[in-house]
Image (tube, rainbow over all chains, first blue to last red):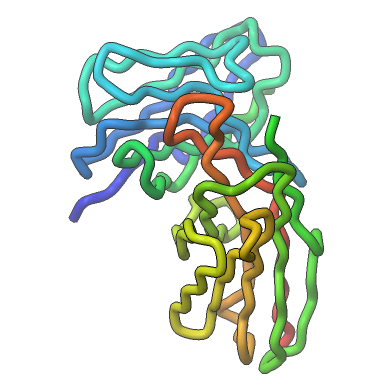
Length: 111
Length: 113
C-alpha cells in the first residue's frame, strides 16, 4: 500500500529537550511538507522540500529544523528554541503543484 | 499575503439536511483544495478546483469555484453522521514557491442523528 506514515502518534517532551518527528512516504513524491496545527487554527507551514538535499523555511520555521537526505524521508526536529511546541504536527507529500497527501499526525506535548 | 476565510466556523445540522460551507480568498485562487479531517487525524483530500466556474462532485459532496476565482463553496446533500468532521480549504500560495498551500481555519461540522 502506498502512503505516508508519521511516528510516533503521541510524543511527550520535557522543556529544554530536542525531539525528532518521523515522516516517511512511499508515493515517490518529490515534495514533502511539515505543518503545525493548533486548536481553532488552520495549518501553518513550518518547512518544505521539493527535492532531496534541499528545503525551504515556511511561515513559522523558528525553533524547528529538518533534513532531506532521502526522497522518502523528511524528519522534523523540534528544538528547545521553540517557545510553544505543544501542537499537532502534520506531514504531507505531493507531486509539486498537485494535491498534498497527509500523514496521520503526531501530537506533541511539552511537560 | 493571501488569506482564506471560512464560514461558518462551526455548524450543527440534523441528519438528512443539506448544508454549505464557504471559503473566501483575499486574492485570486489558482488552485483550491478541499480536505476533511477527523479530530486528531490527518487530512483526507476531497477535491481540487482550478478553473473559474468549475464544479466537481463526489458522492453527496459538491464543490464549486466561482467565476471570479475568489470564492469556493462545499455543499453536502442529505447529510449523514459520517460527514461529521472539520472541513478545510487550502489554496496554492503564490507568495512562496509553487506547491505550497495556505489553509483556512476550518469549519467544524456536527451531524445529529
